[in-house]
Length: 365
Image 1 (cartoon, rainbow, N blue to C red):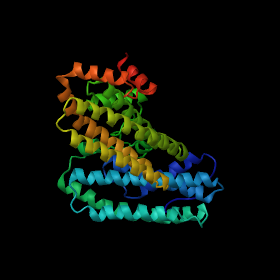
Image 2: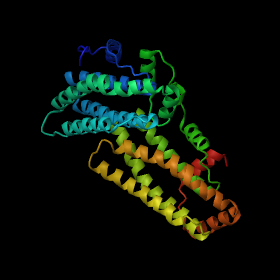
Image 3: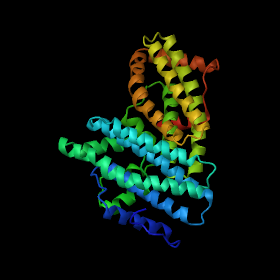
Image 4: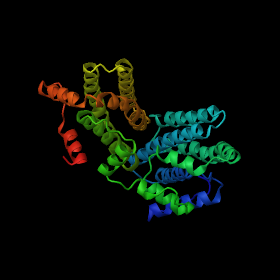
């Protein structure tokens, strides 16, 4: 890497973090959009880390984990940039997004070269990443920086919207703050416990349908999303994939059981948009199956794609489409709850201990 030197093994973390600071300060990488700058800093951090591991006698599994982590994070970063393009209405973004796809495909192709040692693979990937660092950021990314400045985009508002859709870890925030002295992205964004995070999402998006069985199932989906989202930011690659496998199984089971419950209620009470609603259920199930196929093919983007699917489902379908269910069932809520009890007596509902416990904890019942 340009402007970098071989990092000694003692105090490794501080040494390569200092190297990141030096690289950032010697180059004009800053774009002025906090979350984008944070991600660029973290990518430099991952590149420096990979460079260190590729030159030492580290275990192959450790180096491979760093490579996978870097590719996964780059995919996430590109998704953030492409969301930015939508927010600012960046003209003709296709050339930029094609460059994103090209880089990712090249990295994946190199990583899959089973005939080469992991050290050779790492060195080839580093060549490509260094090219990205000094060409893509300084050339391509500065084009949307210039557009933002010319269009007088509200950076604070833009950044706030982006942050709500991005995975951020404590270490990323700490390193960003150390280098930029900017505290726009605060630690409290990520310093919440599981129940607290679920509660925040539930209240912020007003997700309650006010039908206990439906709310219980929706809360379980929020929990799955929060756990996978947290794992994608904080866990090692092996643990992260284990969480993905667990979430994948739970998600498929959830879709089958939850959609069956909702559709039984809609049919019983003559919900007028049953067909349209059911089609959206089928579409979501197809997304889940696609993520599962990606995982089976060792696609590095599978876990990230699943996080995005769960997030989109929470913030679009449940927060918007399911509100029409709440409004429709409200007038017959007593009859609805009575029907649910009958379904339970007949054994037509799946009530899992974990879902019940979460619901009881959430509502303190």
